[in-house]
Image (cartoon, rainbow, N blue to C red; front, side, top):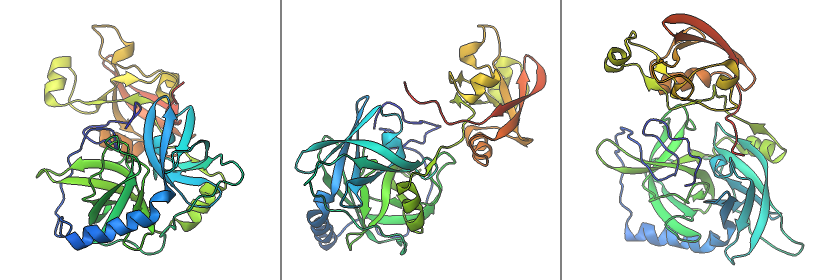
Length: 342
């Protein structure tokens, strides 16, 4: 959707690429004309509650009002690196907005649009008690494909999808034709209540498209906590795109099989402060650091690495076992949020 997506393996947020996720769909994937008409009526009734979110540096996402005072819910990654945020309503009025609260692990955020006195907005109702089921009708209202607050109807194909450790757990999969720009948009059920927020897209191994939704069921109290200012960052060791040490990679580098090679150490991140060395910080004939384990747990690919790191919290200190210049050493570092764009 914009410049700062975390693209890990083949998994992405709504940023223009798909991912491979095997799944077995035993529910309908095609809307009937009656289904489409029902969802079109939901869109017509609730369209004015949805917004376009514009960010500086340049970016576009979606969101929706959850109260009549300008509180907007969206996906956290829409707002994450923005220096400035604006909310655009269906009548094309543009209001500055600020972040109120967020949870990076759930990929949810609340923004406060600065509405002038007298401006009235219509909020959507959140469905935080009743979970969706496969086969349920769902509708996204978003801003993809150069559209403006447009409908994307579909069907729920699965629940409790956990597609990768750097994505929210327990997501909803669906046939809604989402695209970059729809992130953060409301996912409404046939009754016009919001059951989740749009966060990701991808393809199954048999080529079936799926859109993924961060669910709201069970989060009534949590939304209130975000409104009160709750903020949670995911913990990072501050590296990007590590390379698994496969047999072929090990042969080329003359190292044992196992672990992950650090490709890039992010400036200002936890790994940088702890002195980790990546391809971007060693000489042309040197092998960068290879992470072998986190707190004693062996890691051989990106997902295993992220899984172990996300068992911790920002501020925790962890011990990495690292192969450096043929020696096995231990590196202790304090987990930190991913460095923001400046």
